[in-house]
Length: 429
Image (cartoon, rainbow, N blue to C red; front, side):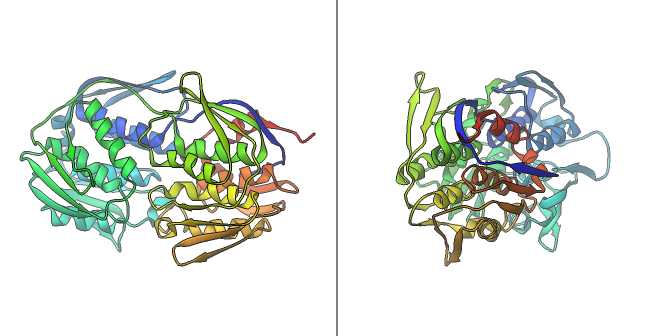
C-alpha cells in the first residue's frame, strides 16, 4: 500500500490511540483470572498487536467479545488455561507482536503441557534466544531455531530464586513477573541491567489491578513474589498511548497551530511520556488542560536538543523528525536499543531522513541529526509502523508531498493513524 502525505499545519482536537502495551498486559491478566473481565478504552479500535494477544487468549480457552469501547474476556482461569484438554503440542500465533511472544512465553512455561509460539511477518526475524536461554536456565524446556521464532516451551516453571539479564528488553521480564505469582513456590528475582523501567512499573500496576502482588526494590534489580496467588477478574481502564501520542506532539510542535490531545494519563508509567521532556528541551510549548485530562501542544520554534532515549527507544522516530524540523545539530542517544525492532530502526531512520534531504549519521550509540529543510520524495516504511508514522509527520513540514510505500504497517499499533492525521491537518494558507 502506498500513501501520499501532503504538507500542512496541525490544528484541532484528537483522541490519543489506545496503548497496546497496556492493553496486551490487561488481556494476559484477564486470561489468567477466572471469570469475566471488562477492559475499557476510549476508542473501539483494536490494533494488530492487541488482536494477536486477544486471539492467543481465545486459543487458550477464553471467550472474548469486542463491544464498542470495551473488550470482554470470560476465562476459565489460570489452572484450566495451563492444562488444555487436547493432548500433544498446542500451537499458538503471536502475529507480529514481540511483546505477545516474550510476555506469554514464561506464562505458558507454568504448564507441563508443550506449547509452540509462532511468529508472522517481521517477528520471524526478531531475536528470541534470550527468552529461550532464560527459561532453560530456570529449569524449563524452551528452544528456538537459530535464535529466532518459533519458541517451543514446556514447564513447569515452579518458582524459586532466579537471575535475569534484562539489558535487551523488558518484555520477557514482564511475562516472568506475570507468571511467578502463579508458581508453586515463592520467588526472588535478581535482574541485571534493567531497561525501560516505566514498562516494568506498568506491568506491576496491571498485575496489581487484577489482584497479583509483586514487590520490587527502588533500583528495579530485586523482586519478591509470593507463589500460589490468584488473578481476579476485574473491570480495567486501558490507558491512552504515549508512544502514538509522541508523533502527535512532535507533529503539532513542528507544524502547528495548536493541538489538544485527550486520553493520556498525566502520571502514566509508560516510558514514552518522556517525549515531553525531550520536547521541552527542543523549545516546545505545552500545557495540561481540563483538570489534567487534555494535553495542549502549541506550534513552536524548534531548536537543537540532546536527549537520552535508552529507556524509551520508541521515541527515536518522532524525535528524529522534531530534530530535523529545528535549527542546529541534535543528538539522540541509545541506538543500541533499536537493532531488534521491526526493522534495524536506527539505520532505517537515517535512510528515511537522507531520502528527505536531511543529514543524519550514526556515531557510537547516538543518532546525530542536522536540522534544516525537509524535501518531499518517496520513502520505504520497511515494515516498521513507527517509520511510516515518522514519514507522515515529516511530510507536514516538507517542501513537497511524501510518498510512503508499505504504509499499511501502521495497523500494528494504530490502524486509524492516517485518518487521524487527515482529521487534524490543515492545508497551507
